[in-house]
Image 1 (cartoon, rainbow, N blue to C red):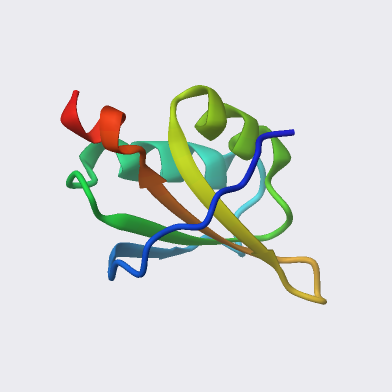
Image 2 (spheres, rainbow, N blue to C red):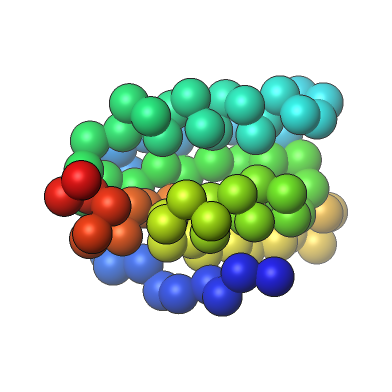
Length: 88
């Protein structure tokens, strides 16, 4: 399981509500959105569940991630590129 590190208080560049989509569509849309996300900005995505496969992929790709799981089981995922990744 990836280590989750706090993100700075940076306004979200993009917010996605993907709770209505079946897997793996939320993951695909999040990865597509991250490809276009400006360096230093945060993507906030609402997913239908705790997105373990997505978190593993984001960690492997060098993203910083914070997750909050709601009592109903859906999750809010905040994603930002690490400084080294943003400079690449």
